Image 1 (cartoon, one colour):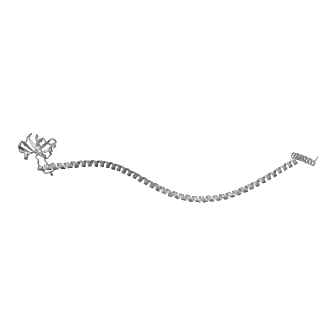
Image 2: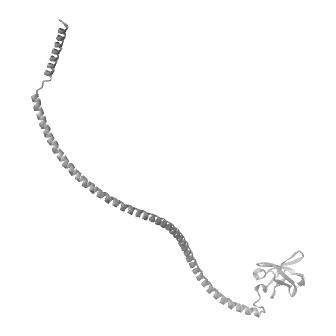
Image 3: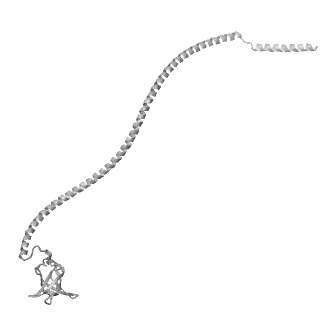
Amino acid sequence: MNLLAKIITVVILIASLMMMFLSVTVYSTHKNWKAIAANLTTERDSARDEVKQNISKHDRAKRQLDADKKATLEENIKLKTERQQLLDQNSTIQLDLESLRKKERANTTALALTQENNEKLATEVERLTTEIRINQQSRDEAFATALEATGDLHEAQGRLTLLLEQNAQLAQDLGTKTSLLRSKGVDPNTPSGQIVPILRGVVSAMHRNAGTQLIEITIGADDGLKKGHTVEVFRGDRYLGRAEIMKTEPDRAVGRVLRRFQQGQIQENDNVATKLRIG
């Protein structure tokens, strides 16, 4: 066998193999086209029904969309109107707010002034309260003083009545004593400190002090004897001298013998007497 025959044989073999592979392939892919067509027809009809349903849904959706669009447009118009109303209301509110702020500032100022005025009024009230309390206290004190003064007045009126009665009695006594003094030769206008009362006593003791003779006598201040008065010393009818009173006690006195008047030796138990004279 030559080369050509071999090549042809190989080609035929390859072709046979290819035909066999094709046959196997065709057999393996063989289908029932009639059944497929029936299925496709069913699917087509189903698809048509679905399309019709979708078209119906689309129409309904379109109608709903148009209605929603119309409602939305109406709502939008309504919202625009409400927005304009709100803007107008906002402008009015802003004006009212500004007016309220002005009023608030004015009220704040007025409140500050009111608080300041209240503080002043509180201070004034406190001052007035203090003054009222002081005045009430002064009134109470004045009332108590008035009551006391009224009592004192009644008491003074009583004393005045008594004094008037005593004055009348004293005037009567004064007239009587003035007449008595005049009868004794004494001027009633002479100060009482210059009138020496008429007294009698005795020398109870003798003393000497730095060359001065002192006598102690039995009459004193209770008898009306005062410092500076003089007493006359005598024994019976004999005049012995004069002594000036230096010191007095209720029931005795001490006198200094005046040498220029001495006319005899003075002893204990000698008599002493004052004489009625203007000093």
